[in-house]
Every structure is written in structure tokens, then in C-alpha cells.
Image 1 (cartoon, rainbow, N blue to C red):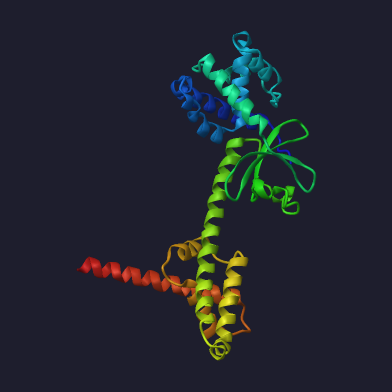
Image 2: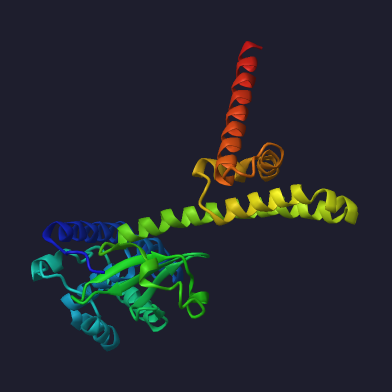
Length: 311
């Protein structure tokens, strides 16, 4: 649960903190603007660098000249829960402070963070570990957790807030991925895995669409014809279940199914029905027929390209 926070790891954290400071300074003109939408520039910064890092920079900036802020903001900065690394001296902490932001901008950002903290969501895993939600999309959440040394770590899991309370079993420490003390590393892993999730969703939807189209056509037939087609029905059900419930196909093959106009499920099932030896493994049949299908399509495309060049 807790990675070792050695000096090299801290250097990485320091570099990320300085990078966040530079981004805040770069966007200072927008953030210093008194318009209502001035905090819109903060959204991508908060997503990329994390709320904790942003809170640390803003809180220390306010504490540096706390008399210039109202009592509510001073109280927030004084009591902000921020994990401090043993390598952080006062000089190091002062280097974090964005120095292009106006006091009005710092106060506005502080109020924004205070408001978000009112609605922060926490969830407890099956093992009793408390996680705080950072961000989420339709199928995955980025979470933070505090280790026994008081250091904030980040991770993600394939579950969203609406289903946390109904997923006690799958919401387990064992299902966490991308665990890191670096928010940016965990965020990058979260984004990459979210792209995988989206591909898996499109892949399953495409296969199930082809299966349902086959099923609808079968149901239009007479009982006698349905009985005659029972082996073909069994073949397509076998293949459909196998490729959607097992991590059998490669990313290339899944992308091909997603983007192809061909009824790939029908082709794979037909190969299993026509040529499959039921003493063989279905895995081998699917792999063999898919690879042959892909190579034939590639060969056809190459020949078409050559013909086009000759013309």
C-alpha cells in the first residue's frame, strides 16, 4: 500500500510541483481576471496536477501574507490538511508558491477549493481502507488514499460513484491500479486505462449487436427451421460468449471488429460451425480463423493498392 518515499521520488514530486506552479503562472492573466468565468482556466490544471497539489500551493501563498486575506480564507489556509514530506524545508515550500497570481485570484481559488471540499466523496473498501474520490468518468474513478505515514497516494479502479455502495465485493484494495504517490503518474494511468475501457465497451457493443441481429433473424423463422439451425445457433452463441467473456482477442483484433463493416462474429462462428472439430479448443479455432481472415483482408487490400498504382 505504501511506496517508499525516497529522495529520488521526492525530486520527482518537487519537479511536478514546480511544473504546476509554472502552469499557474502561465495562466495568471486568465485567473487574475475578475470575470465570472476566470476559474475555468483552473479546471484542466486541477485535473492534470490534482487538487491536493493545487491546495498546497494556494494555502502556502495565502499563509505567506495571511493578513491580506479575510478571516475565512486565513482559517482555511491555517487548517488545510496537507501531507508534508520530511524533505520539505521552509525554503522548499516557498518555491512552490505561484508568484504571478493576484491576491484576488488566490482568494477566489481558495474559495473554489473550499466549496469543492464540502462535497468531497469518501468510500470504504471491503478491507476497510478509506478512499477519497478525485475525478471519474462513465466507467472508472481516480481515488486518493492516505498511508500510515500520512502520505497521500493515488490509484484508480473500474467503478464509479453511483455504484460504490452496491459493489462492496468488487470495491476491494486488490482491484486498485496505478498506485503512486505521484498524482500525475496515477492520472496518466487512469486516462490510459479509461481508453482501454472505452475500446472494450465498443467491442462488446459491436459483437452483441451482431449477435442480436442474428437472433432477430432466427426468431422470424418457423419452429422447424429453427430446429434445423440449432447447431449454427449454438456455434454463434459459443463464439459470442467466448470472445466477450474472455480476454481472448488482441487489441488489433478488437479494433478491427469495432471499425470493420464485416459481420466478424458471423464469420468466426461460421468457421467454427463448418470446419471446427468439436474435440478442438474453441480458443484455437477462433484464433486460427481470425488470423486467416485478417491476413486475407490485408492481402486483398494490398492487391487493391497495387492495382490502383498500376492504373
